[in-house]
Length: 124
Ligand SMILES: [Zn+2]
Image (cartoon, rainbow, N blue to C red):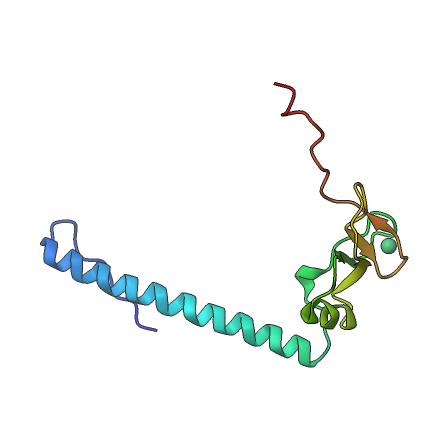
């Protein structure tokens, strides 16, 4: 990767515009590369059946990083596959109010992360 130095502050506008164009081109190239690398990491982890770290949460009960999201509703093909890879767990068709949204795969503990806001805004 070639990185050019910015022009001097006294450089003419054309030089700065040229510099901007090059930097913008570089930015889109970099984000494309980063996205590609990330997808390769994901691909390799799936191939090796390594759970993706960002999909595991720390269990408040046993303190292990084995918590996964509980997916409610009729499971999509993707959700079914994720469940087979232990990336999520399926919670059934109906999510009741106050139902847990995380489950620990080590100890089976279930907990709720997102507290639904209770009528604090509708009182006005
Ligand atoms: Zn646990």
